[in-house]
Length: 145
Image 1 (cartoon, helix red, strand yellow):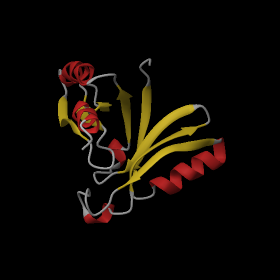
Image 2 (cartoon, rainbow, N blue to C red):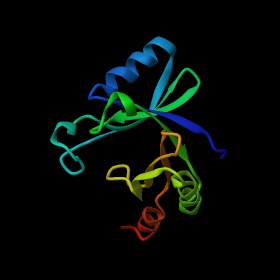
Image 3 (cartoon, rainbow, N blue to C red):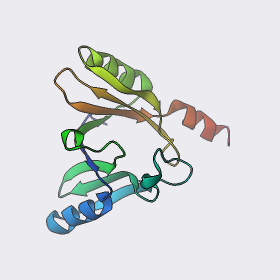
Image 4 (cartoon, rainbow, N blue to C red):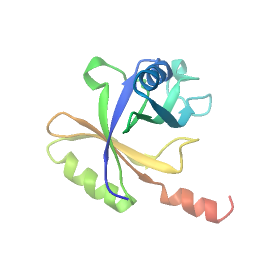
């Protein structure tokens, strides 16, 4: 798998409506959608909202979600999927030089816990979501747990 940068759109509670509007307008499809619920929310107003969605608008792979920290200044992030935790950590180390770690690399909450991610603000002011597979999840799966 080659590396590709995926635009990540943050919404203020209307993610699903926006994604469906873009797909209706430009074509595309939803590949995956998960929601905040009583087990994984950080703020009560998140329950039932989109935690994470992967979709195509036309031929462009995009992602997004309803953000509890939404503001006009951080409503677009750049997301990149990497092959391994080691690759993700190397990337984070470089991006954080002159920047800031917003959220360390850690497993996503259920039901997205097969992956892990970090958020880094680079020295140019852009927010990056660095993701990879969660190696502990794979181990849990192979143990039958």
